Image 1 (cartoon, rainbow, N blue to C red):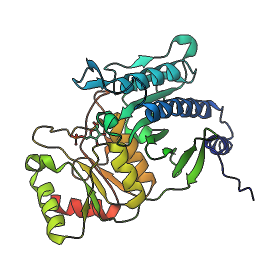
Image 2: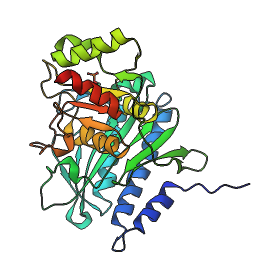
Image 3: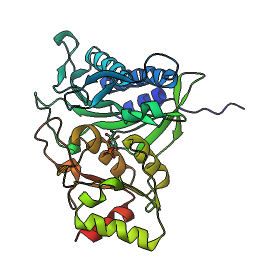
Length: 319
Ligand code: P6P
């Protein structure tokens, strides 16, 4: 007996019909992101077989080694988005400056993306992914608060390929059916459990954290009710948090006073998703990262997010 399962395209068109004056531009943009990530997914799956593993021997403008798959994914995303006719400018984690669409292909959206987050894990077969964050063009201002996001999402290239996004109307997850090549609605209205047993932080930096974070970690270990899970790939650690609950922490530390994760490219999209899924996300103390006015497109920010009870418990150790 056939059971109808909406595809991502069906869902986007259904969502579009909720807005009488929708032009279809956003739907077209999302379809372009979907197509690009399907191509990246196919290369990730084959990366062990073709000469696309390993390093390019170059470093990006932040001194990070560029992986071949990184470079491929970035070029694909830049070319797809700047030629689709819906995008004014893109900002990629791999590129120091914004890239503006050619005038004949310019549009009304700004897209921030990390083409392959967690790419240091590519050769180890750990889950990696693409993160995107979409704003509406506001003059030539690329530095808008996270609250201004029109949509945010990620595609995780793991045991299965999933496309997860929000437009501010809840979070929905779509799993790629490789036999058809379509993303099917597999996780409707994703909700982060109110609390969870898993905490996720790079404890190698423990001595560099502030006292409140150290006390919180000591409490969890003394209480003995938690489990530590840390992949070192934001998408993998946060996707697990969406499914199982718990808390992800990348706080500031003495060596990284603004934290490591990028505000516009990693923190804001995931903070938007976490809050839309009924979770909580904070940057410094109890500040909502979505309320930060960015100073630079590559600003960094501390981030603690996940189940609201877990984040509130963490906060109680900071006060
Ligand atoms: P660390 C990957 O390089 C990344 O940007 C995120 O995906 C991940 O959460 C973080 O950095 C890991 O950083 O310092 O723990 O290796």
